[in-house]
Length: 272
Image 1: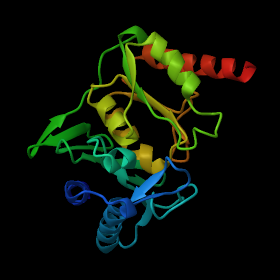
Image 2 (image 1 turned 45 degrees about the horizontal axis):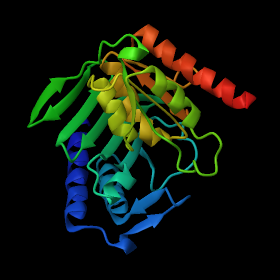
Image 3 (image 1 turned 90 degrees about the vertical axis):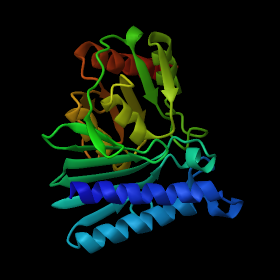
Image 4 (image 1 turned 135 degrees about the vertical axis):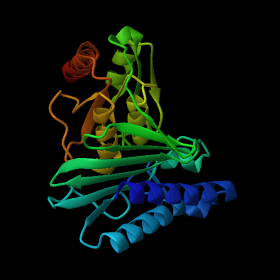
């Protein structure tokens, strides 16, 4: 299953790069829930490729994809969580920060994660109990989280909801509070790669709210298997149905400081 998922993600990545190299016309890019929420023909083509291949190989498994599913993930034995193009806005603007994101959950527990970065040619993967790895130039290298143990030594990443223009719960207060206390906060536009880069030790932490299981399932396992910590933004255990996530390098002081800063920013926002 692991090699099948890796090969499939890399096939989808080549398809995406083909679309990007040929250029997207205006009629190949549409909006969904808001003007900031894009979908392209490349998203749909990647989705079709991935879902068709999984259904043919594992016809008894349930598919849960960004482009064809809604609501909470179903409670089934085998569940594939699919984001065929994570970072669509970046992709549409030719910014090379996007990914193909696949995860497999068994009875609600993520057991396999694959995040493919087509631009770099890197594929991040993890299996429960087997560590986290990055495949580059046909070789697998182990992933290990960073050692930063305080906010002032950390580089963080985050994201903002698509409806931030109208939703007061827009993460701006949390971003400002943490940006003042750490070395920097980056907004990458790909939750999949942000989590993978925490697992790789490039970033020390990442948080985001208003996201879906296909965004976070793979990253949650990558970070855990690389030695990091995964919770929701209140510090509670992260689950497939969670709509926010915080991943860090697992240093208790750092994870706690991020949680406390988020909570303080929200309290100030509530009092305003």
